Image: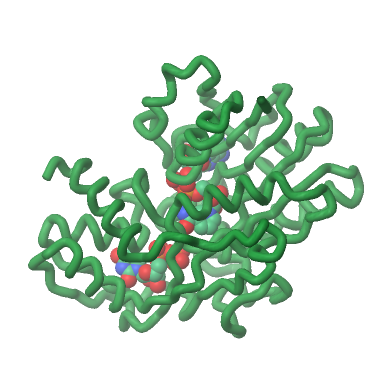
Length: 313
Ligand code: NAD
Ligand code: UDP
């Protein structure tokens, strides 16, 4: 049994991770400031004596003795990370420094939830880990992109200078139950709009692409990554390479919900990446033949069920 700290544990991905780690018999400390996460996401875990919930902001130091740290704290949806851009940068940079300092002192292994956004609006396709990215350092997404890029740099430098055992997961668009209804990301937006028979809001012409990974596949990969040998310190793409246009996604969701929604086109957000698809060769090689198992249709059906319950339909 390991003692594991999950920052951002009350969020979408963090709550799934806490649950899985508890099910594997570990002791889990979930730390969150509830900016985008909710107690509701982890309320069912509170009766487990091996689960602890801490309200804390990672921009402040935190002291605890644990074996492993999963650093997930950071708003992930554009509307939330742009709401207070400076705070988003502080969370990625000061938060990472605090968690890396903790890992260094207590000799814990630490995993960073990085992102495909480090590739910005990519000029190569699909994206491999050796691509340095195409980010606008002063654009509206920069608080997130550049914050996460700086966090990667901090991780690698704490490893090289202080021998901290690090892991970096570059996570591609992930969806599933427990995404917040007003999160603003495309899958939750489209499903909620379809279930309410409201217009489906496509930003731009809908030809931009994303590759969507179901949350269970991600959690499996994160745990495998944490358990790799200490010499595995390079960033690793974690995602599902099946790529869809936003228009294609909208039609799929309309079909699966049997919705009467129509599509409405809105102006594209500034610096919206045109295409995104992970090359996951490295993950397959290093994570014991890991690959995503959930087809988009199956994952969407589970997510639609979740939102139906949330909407009491
Ligand atoms: P989320 O917004 O649901 O969860 C983030 C959690 O972090 C929330 O519970 C929030 O309250 C908490 N948090 C934010 N700032 C904090 C702070 N300063 N101190 C303590 N807690 C704080 O988002 P998510 O989708 O679960 O994403 C989790 C992580 O994975 C994030 O780091 C995100 O950047 C990364 N990621 C997610 C995706 C995705 O598609 N969901 C893709 C790439 C990377
Ligand atoms: N998007 C959209 N309608 C929405 C929300 C998002 O067309 O209601 C588009 C958005 O412009 C982007 C894609 O869907 O091209 C994915 O957006 P999301 O915010 O989910 O993720 P990210 O852009 O961070 O990959």
